[in-house]
Image 1 (spheres, rainbow, N blue to C red):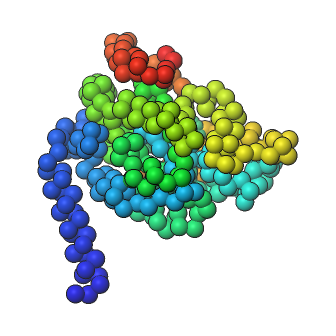
Image 2: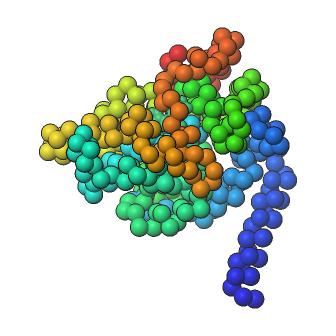
Image 3: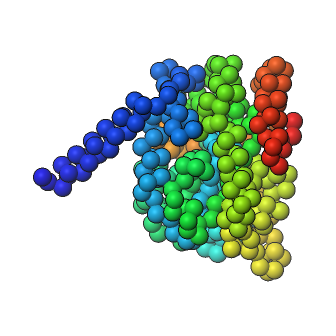
Length: 329
Ligand code: PAP
């Protein structure tokens, strides 16, 4: 058989395997769009089109000791985290210090953070990471679904979580953009599912608690961050990330205000208004602008009814009361 036919055959076999697995999984209709379902895969809810990437990451990815993995439940601040880590790790190659003079040559000016630090499942993952040193990659996979080599290697993980009510509102907005619908809809139905943990890579509590537990057991390996903390004191957490990743700021860099420059470079207002983030698009569909909506803490208050908010707060309290994680309302 010709090589191309062998590859085609292999792909077909893989698709068949995915279909066979999907056929065995519990499924629930997704309230965000037409005929779409969530599937319960190893305790987490995913879409059918994500399964192949999740399995190949789980089973085939070989981590290197100096890899850096960014992890999150969707809509927790992934894009922001990507920009910050990219800027911290690559600052020696780019002129962060002159950000304020508009003389910064960071790729963040011309490239969306998702294209600088790709998801493991993206089509350009291998080509865009192979020349990186260290390799920066990202995932929405929950902790139990990470490849064994990530856990056993020296690879470091930075995890970001966010007040689940803000995560929900952000997801609700993003869903309609993702599916190409004119406006967000079915707020109540999506919230109902969210409270049952049925949302992309949910339940959010298992996602967050899985990484939290691992970060407490392995603080040298996993840095656990909160969106709200980054908002409150960005520079403090930029330093913390730099120290954790082995890219501490020198006294000279501190004197030049580099942590502050990185905070400004990666701020919501700055990134949102760049041409690339106003007009560009991701290869799998969504516009780059759909990753920059409001970037605030507490926007849930403008969208959830008092009953929904009460229910959500109670749920969050119950799910996190045994942990050291708190969210402010
Ligand atoms: P993803 O998981 O699909 O990549 P993610 O980046 O986690 O999405 O979530 C997008 C949210 O982060 C949006 O929140 P909002 O809907 O409440 O506005 C987006 O605005 C916010 N965001 C993106 N970049 C930044 C930033 N630099 N600072 C603060 N928030 C940001």
